[in-house]
Image (cartoon, helix red, strand yellow):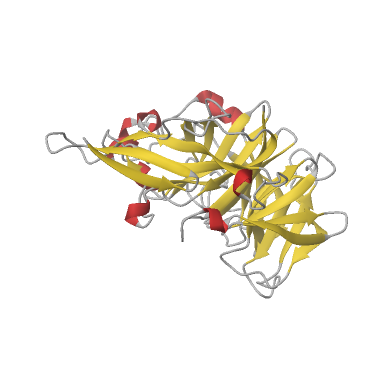
Length: 376
């Protein structure tokens, strides 16, 4: 076997390439060989690097494993924004948690069609009882899904993170029975408000009957039914689609305004808070992002958002706040390229307090989505 060392942001991957007498182009992966634990604990920010894992392909693919069609997916990180490093830097605040393990647990058809090569996590949400969830995207088949992630040991850096997904079932755009999440172009946030898992979408529109930027409640009870084959699915994949409508509209931000990045529980402990952006200058300035809150709607109704009067101007598209997490009561926002902001909802200020970009290779970070987690 030939050995290859591939650098991760905070360590290394030991990759073993097949020899000439072995089949397949994939690799066997050892995430670390010694000192595989980390020192971070308590309330931490978990975030995903949405860059595909194979740096040698200019991040155009995940790293293929020894079994053809299986891949080492996105890397997850733990971050402590308040930890003080002895050297005055910030490296001690960050550690890898591991990588998604994209294998036949996602179905033989997904392995065979190669779609796991570009399967990507768009956002994360964590609940102490309901566990870790992700909004995910199948790039090859152009379909959104809700995914449950399983971390074996939160104290280690070498987790191969288990993945179980339910793809939003398809349907005609004009049909009221079609899942409203199916036709949205841009899913951009995921988070819990109380026990409700909420999905955020941008104001880029939808071909479906719900088209404004919104928060949608994820009907996680549907996943108890397992997976169902859809008549319109040419592959007839038995481990792909959810069995019923996954989403229902929960809150509206209006036309052309939607979630720039992430959803968290608001200060009152009941409402949801989301970081918003505009898709049209006439609706709201394109370089203006702001925090907005949504109270839980009455049964059968949709709530209307209210501005929290916390905002940033002169925002650079492509490096706006795309992730939020509340740690020890303080709300943090993380930008796509790694800037960290403290969002003070009382003083109504947003201040940059850290920058993680220097801990990653050039062009190696595309931070998409975060969640507050508690690590023993």
